[in-house]
Image 1 (cartoon, rainbow, N blue to C red):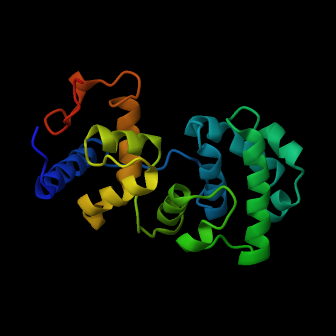
Image 2: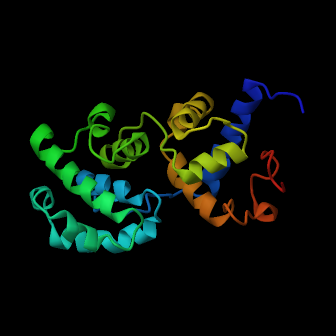
Length: 217
């Protein structure tokens, strides 16, 4: 099979985004955070290796017990871990939640930093989390959050063959116009859950079948 040109790949990427917008015009973050950037940061931190639905079950309990950043910063890690015990890596995440709250207070004056650099200094926060917080929390779109769904779909579509999420993001940013970056994560997550499921992809129902090199394979 001949190597695809960058022009052709960009055209496919644009078609993918247009069809995603048609099928998921109102895609929103699945995590519940009440518009609070700090609660969003914690929710995304907790969502690693765990479903958003599972996170949405534990965060109401977490915020009822620790309603402010100060409360969480002073929490006992074992008590937080008990609240989070139903999600993956709950002990590590409990420790990161507390450390994150402490750093927001001690180094950022009690406000979640509004820069990628500042966000990624927070314990447990990487590029993906920073992208989601900047996008959904502050309305700043400077990248695409590449989670497991986005990573898998980008590779299925042959829009990237990078080995990690960071390089996959850079590949997508080169292909997708900046004005279309904002909804990519939310739309592709829905697509990954409903159609391009990791275990049982529904290629016969896929609205991208004609632009996906992997459909049916």
